[in-house]
Length: 115
Image (cartoon, rainbow, N blue to C red):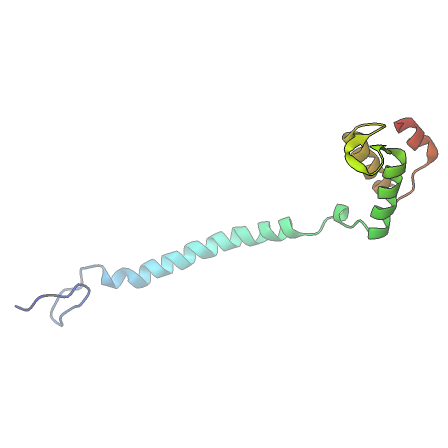
């Protein structure tokens, strides 16, 4: 009897070596992947949906940045690493967020209260 090559079948051989199950396994894999896609795609769509907070215009951001620089001057001019002469970094972030929320309009009373 000649040597048998792995994966090769002779014409009279039984097919109990699970070779017939490949289409079934492939079908199960496709069903499994489609179930995952059914749940993953809506979650991805919701996660990638734009939010209202991400729509800050460049003009408002620049205006608020300059207002923050005026309200919180640097301790040493030209050296941002020296820190602010008034307030903390959290105070600056809160001021900027409030400025953006107000559309770039900050009244003088609010800026005096943060000093």
